[in-house]
Amino acid sequence: MSEHRIAMVGTPCEIMAASKLQYYTDSPIDVKLGLFCMENFSYKYFGNLLKEYDLKMEDIEKFQIDKGFVFLLLKTKETVKIPLSVAKRIIRKNCNICVELTSETSDISIGSIGSEDGWSTLIIRTEKGEEIVNGAIEQKFIEAKDFSQTQFNLLNRLAENKINKNLENIEKREFFARPVLYQREKSDDSINREISESNFLDLKANVIDVGVCVLCGACEYACPDDLITIDDTKPRMKGECPPDCHACFTVCPRTFIPEDLRNDNSKAIGDYIKVLTVKSLKHTQGQDGSIVTTLLDYLLTNDIVTDALIVDKEDYLAWKPYAKITSDIDEVVKSGGTKYSVCPVFKPLRDIKEGVD
Ligand SMILES: Cc1cc2nc3c(=O)[nH]c(=O)nc-3n(C[C@H](O)[C@H](O)[C@H](O)COP(=O)(O)OP(=O)(O)OC[C@H]3O[C@@H](n4cnc5c(N)ncnc54)[C@H](O)[C@@H]3O)c2cc1C
Ligand code: SF4
Ligand code: SF4
Ligand code: SF4
Image (cartoon, rainbow, N blue to C red):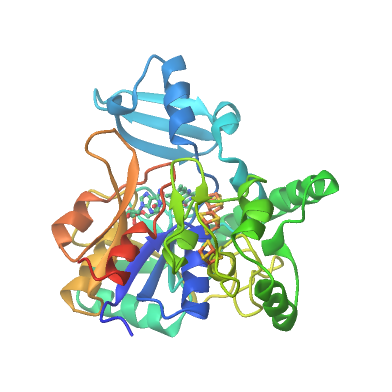
């Protein structure tokens, strides 16, 4: 059992990978803070798109997506807006078959939909999540207001739209390509049978080569023999797998999902205890209500977790995300704000596994 108790932040697909790691392995992840996520972009192609607007990544102070536009808030304080219909061509292919908006397997989900500017929408899903939010309110880390029916209807409608649009995409795609495994409704027994016959070659054929890999890095983390490496485009394997290993196929969020974790597509935002609109009383540098930063501050300050697994920006490449583990609240604060591209979030967990920290 790891002595680390980690709070992780991630998009719905990354949170699903974390949930599978918890389900199938002895995972150090203890608290899951899931983000809402409608879509994500390729870092390289985002840079190319900006060139068409005579801009570079380093010109941007903040990215915000709202009401059908990508808003670029520039360091010069000007705002440029790109219609999502234009930005559509740089959306990662895997996002077009993603049927989850609100990180349904997290302890607490956070996004902006439904809340006014400077506030965040927060969904409490588990008892652990409820205890954390109540504690953060009591200790005056955050303030909370009820989420009105009108706000709820908007969130629910957008979640339904995403699910329905991408279910259609899955149906079209399955006409001529392999089935999308994570949407298969299979019993746990039959999933276990499939897993027992699968290894990296099956992951490659069903996930990586068909463009549904979300680049989370869970496969790399789980590989006991260090055979997998991930670059900016995809995981690769070098070497020979032992015959009884299925770890990468088991934990991938785009292979079969066990019954307990599987999304019920008829419940647009999944199961939950309560939805609130919330704002930080401690931090302001975040994307919306700075709630993720503040909950991590609360969790670290109260020693509820030992570390936070977060996504910061590289110093040498503007807006290029990379994952790190830290127990330093200043580093958590620095990592606030949304980076609209992907990185293998589980990579830093390998250091913990190998005792490098
Ligand atoms: C790709 C993406 C798409 C999103 N789409 C939507 C959407 O459609 N609707 C919506 O309401 N909200 C969306 N969000 C969530 C939203 O942008 C905010 O992250 C959320 O409201 C929390 O704001 P905050 O001020 O509380 O967070 P902050 O206090 O600013 O903290 C943000 C945290 O997010 C983490 N983070 C930043 N970028 C990434 C990344 N690429 N991958 C994983 N973790 C990251 C950082 O570790 C940081 O701790 C999206 C987020 C991402 C990453
Ligand atoms: S697959 Fe894409 S849209 Fe879905 S959660 Fe992951 S990044 Fe967001
Ligand atoms: S050794 Fe196991 S985890 Fe590693 S690549 Fe092979 S099947 Fe996957
Ligand atoms: S193949 Fe690996 S990196 Fe890609 S989604 Fe699956 S676990 Fe994540």
